[in-house]
Length: 322
Image (cartoon, rainbow, N blue to C red):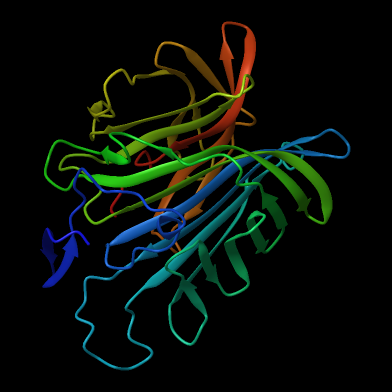
């Protein structure tokens, strides 16, 4: 147990520090002392008709900065929020939905020891044969299984991922790229490849940071690339790991919010990311209180496609607050 803690509204949270010894499958599960945690699955699917789809399923666990001495089962000791989205070029814009509930009366929850997190009838669970997610959204459904044969990839310094230069501005972070996918989308059979991230922390955003750019790319040769940067209010890099760079190649303006997003990017002066479709803006004001762009992208070296994955762009609508 991490003994270093900081206070928020009188409640003590563990601080993320280097040297955490990951223990699987225990660390696939929830770390409920920490302030926030998320399980994030993105990927590309192909239908029987050969159509490309992008999908995203995210479960957030947050521990409110409140004293929890009240024994009532309605006391919000933990809150689970979930986002799901389907990028479908024929539809022309992102289909998305969200859920949120307190961990009371079994309506939502997250398990320690292994991945099992749910809100109502939305779920993500790790079993003997891999991960499985079930999403019944307003205008789409996902029932997908992901293999878990590959070992987790520890990001940053052996899983200690800095998000700034200050103490505690970090997360514990691992990924599982190149997950084979099978299942159904909108009741139709699909196959594909996915990427899973799991992070937990207590103090994520660095002082002066207003958002981040992130990508997770499954490369066609079996490799993988994850890159991120934290941005300031002028959209300049406030923090990035050594060697990481993002260059804006093209912007798209949302017709709904008027927000400009850099939907085409050059990452690390190496990979050019181009979106499956421009309109992949996600309005999550009903749960996490923000609007951001999160979408399926193709990766190119020169004119040759070399991979596919996801790009996430936050803090362009308004500064992010975690």
